[in-house]
Length: 62
Image 1 (tube, helix red, strand yellow):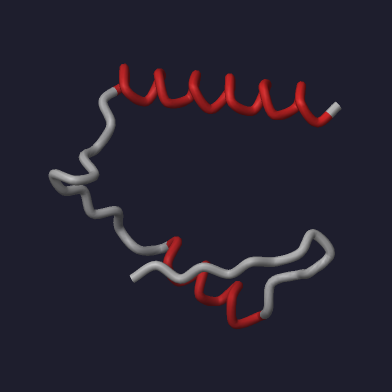
Image 2: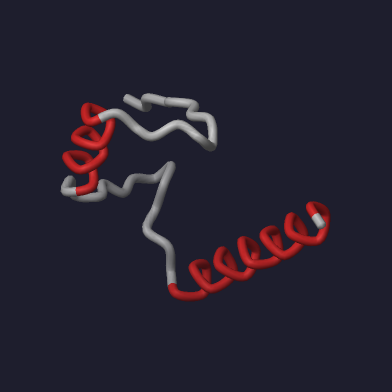
């Protein structure tokens, strides 16, 4: 199950939210046919796409 919390930039997460994040972070990742483990080539392409996206965002903000 996915839970979403929207915070303002000035807002801090609650202690309960921090505990939930810590608990989930310790869980093992489960891969399946809908979300397979990335190959090194796929991971490299994903990182490049994220880098390009972030560069584009910074250019539009300034």
